[in-house]
Length: 383
Image 1: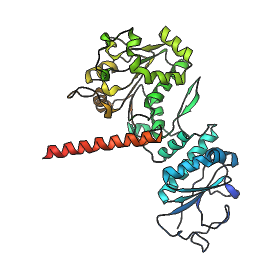
Image 2: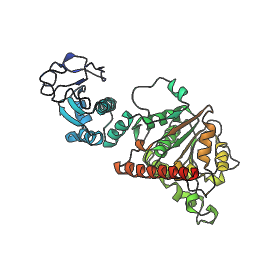
Image 3: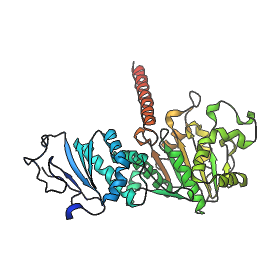
Image 4: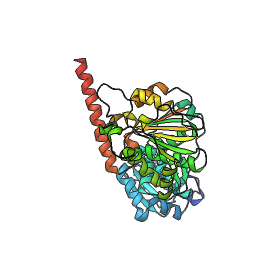
């Protein structure tokens, strides 16, 4: 049985070109490989079990990829239900063929990150695992495919955090869309990084001098209160609704710079209801929780875009808090603008969540329930 052997970046072991091979049990690492030999694995001929050898550049790279006490390997074993045995800069992976191939991709991705000088965290491992499943979607697809894909993931750079790279394929496509398009829609569940990366991109644009200010907005539908009846000045009125955006700002900027920006107008808090009639020029504009905008509000917001500005719209269509019978402006805008030049769209899925593993399971449970209720409603209508 033949196998297409691919080489990871860097040197191969034992002077050969193979970096990922099937390894018969009982042979030493680096020995000649003879598939189906008497010394092979008892289940070497099984169609549902595979055993491959992955070799990294050197022991230092392997140590950083495998993690402290091989914790990254152990995490991969748990997530993908495979067995991983490390030996120097080699690791033997055993499991179903499709999963061993995914592990090879994970190792390749992590090795590229190490080569670029990044520190590997369990979040990075999770991102590489999800990337191996290729769960990112962007339109217009033909347009994005026409651009040669650079080696490694896209990144944003800020003074406080330095280089921040995408953790999975969906985030990579998202950052590419932010770089290429003036208007980007990002849909998806909590924990996918859509708001956090949007804020980081806005801060990066500001620090590079590509925009003159950052404008943050978010509807306050879920509170059931009108801003005019809330106590305090405008910032105090909307602060509770923009707290997730503030958290991201403080992640990417020093606290003193955030406070200075808020006081000087470099960072502006602009409630959605107060944006009518404005034209936002030379600004990075972010609308968060956009699923709670009405169609009229969304149209009003999108037409505020001025010269030299970038606009990012984020939201989760499964968390709409609008009154019954009122359609979401985010859903309508994505439907209407999918073919408009200069508009990008990324739809994150449950598998793209990069928070705690439990958050992924919680999101999946809710998505499954939503799908079940939708199917039940369709069945009732058929009756």
